[in-house]
Image 1 (cartoon, rainbow, N blue to C red):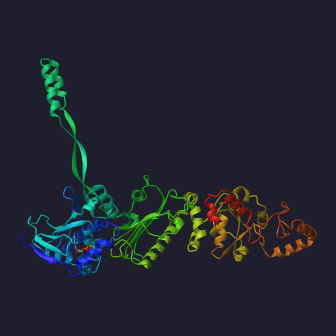
Image 2 (cartoon, rainbow, N blue to C red; image 1 turned 90 degrees about the vertical axis):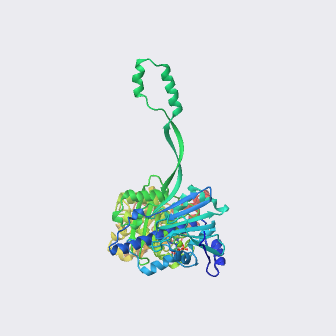
Image 3 (cartoon, rainbow, N blue to C red; image 1 turned 90 degrees about the horizontal axis):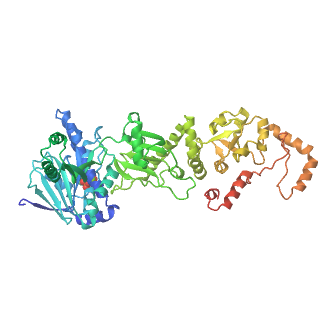
Amino acid sequence: PGNQEKHQFGAEVSRLLNMITNSLYTDHTAVVRELLSNAVDAIEKQYDTQLVKTASGGEMDDIANYKVVVEVDKENGILSITDNGIGMTHDELKSFLGTIAKSGTAEFASAKNKKTNESETMIGQFGVGFYSSLLIAEKVAVVSKNDNDPKQWIWETDATASFHITEDPNGNTLKRGTRVMLKLKPTATDFLEHDKLEKMMKEYFGHKRHRIYLVKPKTITEEVPDEEAEAEAKEEEEKKDGDVEVEEEKKEKKPKTKKVEKTIMENILISQGAKPVWTRSPSEVKLEEYEALYKKLSGDKNGKFMTHTHFAGETALSESFSAILYIPERPPFSPFSQKDQELDIKLHVRGVFVTAKLQDFLPKYLSFVKGVINSDDLSLNISREILQNTAELRGVRKMVLKKTIAMMNDLAADKDKYKKFYEAYSSFIKMEISENEDNRSMLAKLLRYRTTKSGEQMRSLEEYIESLPEAQKTKKVIYYLAGKADEVNKSPFLGRFADKGIEVVLMTDPVDEHTIERMTKYEDFKFENIAKDGIKLDEDDDKEIKEYEEKYKTAKTWLDKALKDSVEKVVFVPGPANVPGSFKSSQFGWTGNMERLIMAQSSVQEDPMLSFFS
Ligand code: ADP
Ligand code: MG
């Protein structure tokens, strides 16, 4: 073309380009993310500009007309991304695509100095994303048309130090918008594979409200008239000619057809083309929508989950933060599993997927939670692959943890539901309580036990405390006994408590005793294991014990001698009439229950409980 202009990129550009293309992005799929982000931003700008125009009486474009289309030209090795957003004028092409770290989007946003309610937050900010295209392309052409420029222009670079801008010889084919065309490097032909493209596009943009399409070939079978068969049939008929009945048959005869395979191009909708579920108000979202999202996130075909929580709106951290968290119907891994579990929470920033690898985001034993988070205010690093600000992330993590625990707490309102939840997840909670001090007090509220007064019902520690007589309340003690379910009920240790009407918490899960030993306290109530020595129930105890010691002096001297090698000491304490005596462990020793568990562990080396107790 005659009127081609040649421009040099801004200073240091070649070196910068080299740096960007080789060290900024860890993953080449980032190119798709960056170019689609730009297309989506361009649509937002157009939408925003339209809003302003309609405010002064102009006509509004239908939002449904906005779209981004991705196409592949396999023969020529070209990937192209076309949007009907705002487009760029000649000068904008020169400035926005010719200067590294110049972001037309950031300028647009700051000129507005606001986020309009209807437009989504724009993604671009650093002015480098476009150049990621050079990771996979040996040549890049950008065709663009903006309302403020009567002409359509082509911007081109072959990844050297210069770029060209030419008037498009084909005229204004784009009405308005931009097409970015990448002539792929021979090493990047992956980007010509429709299935791979579809997967990466869905990962990043699956939830955008914009319509993003991939043009993909599809093989269909078509019925077409079969002329050969038709001719044969005719011949046949002619042979039989003269028969009267044939006339009748002829009427009913369908024309002969055959099946033909044919490839058509199909526009596949990548994004959902609607506001993502989590940004909507929870009261507007139907159960089926939560189920559909759960299906997508978990890969679980039936889409059933135990419970979920959805919070959207402003938080202390973020003007716009939203999340949906789920607890699966069944735990996706065992609490005794030795390997670290990968967390299944997908983080989006400004609607674009960023990462599912949120390291240590939730405590180890709570990583069965699945979900999705979006924040419009988290700051990303320049490659937009990782979060920049760890303090921000800590804040988000804290909130998510709080909401996760609240979600489990809320289940308690429905006893049957909670029972199901507790059966499936109590070991996870107990493990977390044992291993991690930080969240103990919050998680302890989830614990449930039978007690000597609850029958088959399970009680929370809170309920236990509330029903205590005043005297025990002021002592601030929770009495408990751990052991096998069929043993605790008839334990001799319980007798004295029954006599005095004091409730005892019964713990029958093998991990219970260990968990309580780690906890030591619930709120300001101390746990006391009644299988251990030294428990005094009330003031009368001291007096009675003294009396007993006097009364049974001779027996004690004899027993002391006889049991010298087996027990630490012999104590005479008041007890129920039908129990002559029992063995207790010392304050710091193992109870019979604990000893039994540990013995069982050491005989089965592979048992994961072993590591739990070590
Ligand atoms: P960023 O998106 O962070 O601003 P980029 O390097 O991705 O940086 O893009 C630079 C600028 O080029 C954008 O800010 C925008 O002004 C312009 N631009 C890029 N792609 C398009 C497009 N498809 N339509 C309109 N403008 C675009
Ligand atoms: Mg960008």
